[in-house]
Length: 72
Image (tube, rainbow, N blue to C red; front, side, top):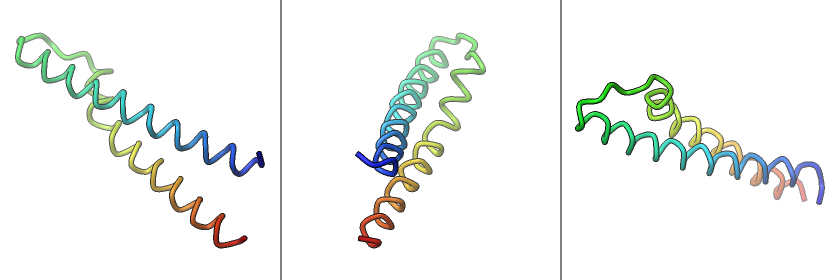
């Protein structure tokens, strides 16, 4: 496996992990909100910023893969 392939794999897996954590944070935020419990800032931060970061990472992975395949 080349270095570029390893990097793309890491970026893809990181995007998936961030998206899953963000989705869980969104669910946690809703549960805490409806139970009238104060939402910890860390959970709120993941809920707000997690999906956009995962989207950017996924876009970088897709664009990098397209560029890699065109150079061959």
